[in-house]
Each structure stands twice: as structure tokens, then as C-alpha cells.
Image 1: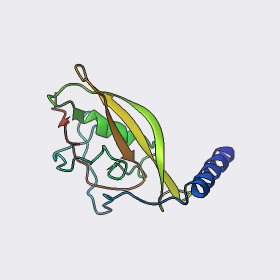
Image 2: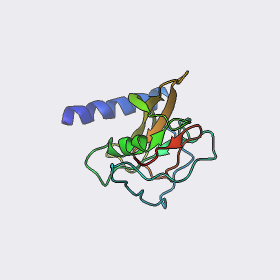
Image 3: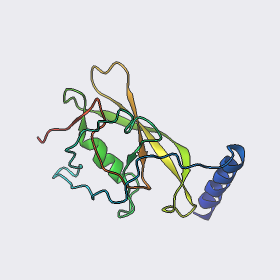
Image 4: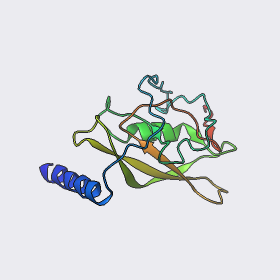
Length: 153
């Protein structure tokens, strides 16, 4: 564990020096956002569709999915993704691609966070979508443009 923390701190230090510092470019943090409700299938209840075409698709406007009240740092991403469907209600398939885009945060032991990048597609999808998730900050959870909320079964 100490070795992992050391490597992460080293990585952040290298990024800080090589990139001229880590800047917080995230524009949609909202610490007053309500805690999302859960459905019976353990997915989030999503009722609003974002009017901002950048929401979720741009690293400056990630889906802020704060997880600190759980012991699993990917559980809220899964809850969110399970609540989505394709443009016409299609079942989504997703996978994590990478972590990227370091930014400063007070909600991390090392003072920096990373965005998680997920690829989404569905049967008939011509080009997979890419969504950015921020597990360190809060924000109102909405369906990204071009997708729909999964209907209850």
C-alpha cells in the first residue's frame, strides 16, 4: 500500500513539473447537489437530461459522481451507468478505458484526483461514446445528451 501511494505521489510530482502544474479545469462541481436515490436494481434514479452537450463528454464537464460514503470507488459509476440506455432505450455495454486528466482536490489523500474514462456502446451503435467520471467531487446527476434513462423492468 505504501509503495502504491509513493508511486502515485511520484506520478503527480512528475506531472506537476512536466505540465507546469495541475490546474482545476472542472467547471460543473456542485457541493450542494442532492444525494442520488437508488432503484431496486441498485442503479441511480435519473430524471433530468442535461441540456449541456459537454456534460459527461468533456473532461472539463465530467459526471461528478462523489463516492466517499462507500468503500468501493467504482460503485457509483456502475450505479450511474446501469441507469442509462441508448438513444432509443437500447441496453448499454461499457468498459473503463483509463484514468486521466489530473486535477487538484481536497477530497484525496494526495491532493489530486483523476477522471475515469468509460466507453459506451449498444447494438447498432456506429461510434462508441466516451464519458468522463469524477469520483472526488459532487454534482447534479443527469442523463448525458444523446442517451436516455433506462426504463424500469
